[in-house]
Length: 222
Image (tube, rainbow, N blue to C red; front, top):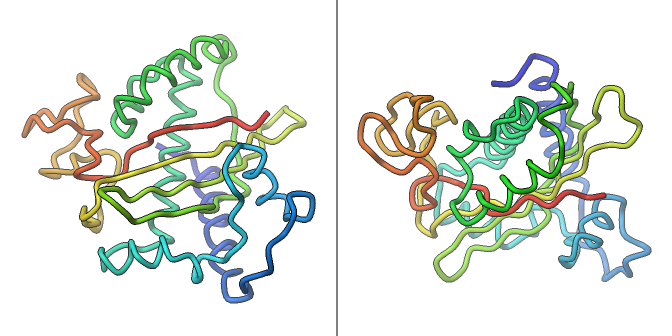
């Protein structure tokens, strides 16, 4: 699902983020023009920038408290794999394989954006992930919601690719260790490529926020 270079860059980005947490403390409130490049990028996308490190982020702490198996590093790697699968599907001109982890409400918007992007005529692109960082997290009402900023270099292009991913799941959902994108989040059976929406073994809808994290929104930073 991910080539060696992309996977190595993903693991490096996750390690760099986690390694920097110990040095992060809660700063005073900052104006948008004083924010770090990452926080400033998120601010321009329309949400209040989060400048607290993850240890101070009550949303992540609350998710972990309700789901002891939740691991931030593993979660970020999983999101990076979704990112890779989504862009591989875009490059092939067929988003269907990515439907495994895209919420039904987001699907129509992403499919329409893919049609307008012209990517299906451009061929595959080589990506190197540079940053993957949760910017906001909430654990309230009936929802766990995390917004993640992903930046990547694209071979042959001067400007980096910057996307803001919003993923969610139903509150109370528990992490299943070892689960990946190629297996059903309900029964663990292999995902059949003939139908990217349902498990061929148990009939479960694959992109079900009651079972696993699903993508609710992807915003491209111009």
